[in-house]
Image (cartoon, rainbow, N blue to C red; front, side):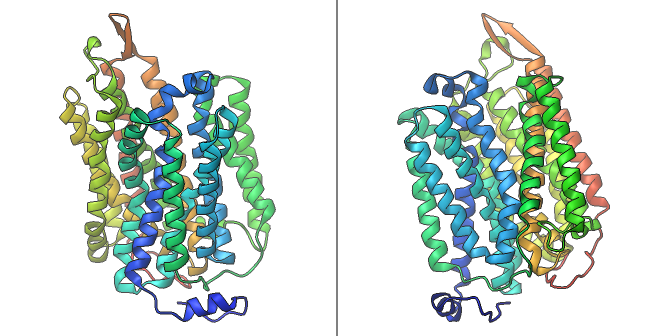
Length: 484
């Protein structure tokens, strides 16, 4: 799909003329995807300890995690559009460089503000996953494309699930700053691999970067996600929460009107409003919700003391290890999902994945009293997410022009992040609102955990319904080259 273009440098032309090692391309993009996803859960095991480490309140310490989600949501569609305009490989290198800079800033931080800055820069790196999927479409042979897309897409879940126990071990046995040495080194290895293995991007969009659209999207998304993620601590009826939610929504509405009128929009909303893309993105919200629910609820169930008759009394490390099979099964399911997509279509694989997630949470209502129960539930959710994550990019890329794949995949990633943020807020309220106390220890009650499982199952069921209305075969558009 590469084409000769006048803006390439001599070094880029030489690289472009070299044969593409397709296996190296897939390995490199899968590795960078794992690194980026690892950044999202890097500090999760440390959240209870951050107030003491940084001498801040628990709500302030939570910002080290919240800012990563915000940065990922805001930067991903912007990086996708920049990749479509100026080269996807170039933007992957930029994002990995930001992760390295963020790791260095966080490494030398001893207070909250520098840590937040470093974590925001690390969160921006999540955009390498949708960019990587779009690179695969540009450079791989059609026969290899389905499996490669499924593998790289799955890294979003695999990196987080596998990274949790790694982060837990480092946090428990080493100085917590060592986490950022590891993250910086991993990002540096990824940058070198991309520089050496990924061919120059020449399939690019025409037009200019929509600066005003980028600012509007950043402000609007930040307002909405901030209100959702911090509403529990600020109070859902507080002026700060309502101002963030309403202000963000108003900005996004104004942004949408502007995008429809600008000749070179950040995101082509007419394409995004097509039936396949719209329904896939809406269903992605439910998948993001259901997947994140397992990472929020199951560790609390595992780590809660046994004295109340609800918790399982496990350490942070054991709880993280119990979630690891979820990530491993996502990785294992990616080639299976690719074969199913090739045989029956991405819509079928997507629907099956969300249905498995729903079944997993229904089982959780009856399996929550033993450690192995949580492993079964996490693994079931991982099965479903493996199929769902592998299918989303295929559905999106079959319905958008080839010159808009990075921006469209970036928007899809934002929808997943939105689902995760909503899950964190909603389930946090449920768990905090129904507590039991025994021997001076307070934990969420058994009914609170069951309500979270019901909500997660319902969210997944809504996702199944949405996929029913996705066209069996996406409408063919200029540049689309993937089967539905």
